[in-house]
Amino acid sequence: MKKMFIVCCACAVGLFSSCNDDDDATIPFSQLPENAQTFLTTNFPAVQVTRVEKDSDGYDVRMANGYEVEFTKSGEFDHVDCGQDPVPQSILDLLPAPIAEYVDTNYPGQYIEEINKENFGYEIDLSGGTELEFDTTGNFLRVDN
Image (cartoon, rainbow, N blue to C red):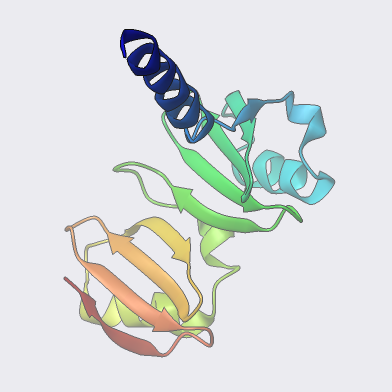
């Protein structure tokens, strides 16, 4: 009976360790898709990339100033998080124009800190803590609570 218990415990440990979510692989910057490399050097020219991880969804990039950018497998940006700093204008210019117009009109004095591309469009986090959702063409959908 004791042997059976030990065998069951060993199997359980093996099962749980094989199900961990630690499939990320650290890779050099040069192994990012070329369009992802260009995105980073264009939009964050003075910021050092400290870590690049490849996972099942794409690539996660961390920078020395704490910024994080995620890319799809094809190298398109999917998420930009600038902490409490404004997202660079060069990235905002890649979004549909109505998003910036809506933020400027309805949230004067606030700026966009984070952009998430979603299936429905975009989730935008503002400096005041408000999260807004827009469709793929930039039409306002709702405040996300």
